[in-house]
Length: 147
Image (tube, rainbow, N blue to C red; front, side):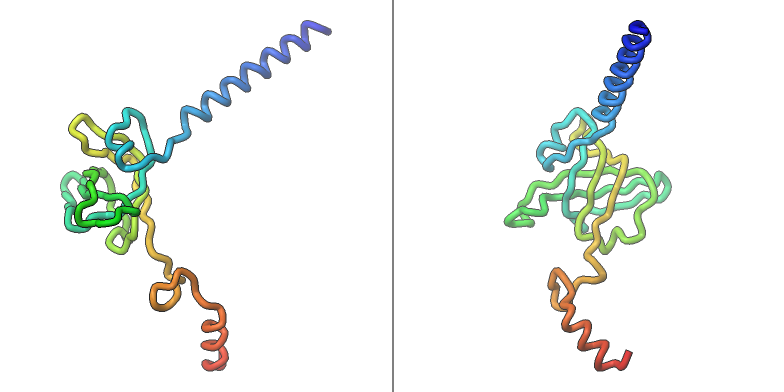
């Protein structure tokens, strides 16, 4: 009976260690643009797209662009991170306010993105660029329309 408990405990411990190590292997760290530039591992980085630097090669399905820090005080002099993404360009890429990239830099300093997540301004954003819709304006519009 005691041997069964020891064996069960050992099996449980092995699965616990295996599960923990698998979890840490699959998590990807969020880093700044500067840290992404020098990383040797797969990372996530967020940045604003420099639309002046966007090119797409349809033959190779290669999207090349650059991103910069969304919190940069002066966007004209903010350091850019060149990015290469192989795959289909997301349909809303042109309206994107920023992107989240998963990948790592190559030896030439270009960030090779395996995944590209487009962040777009919300279609529910209020008038005049307000972050959220004013519920009173919404209710007034419904009342005046008779809906």
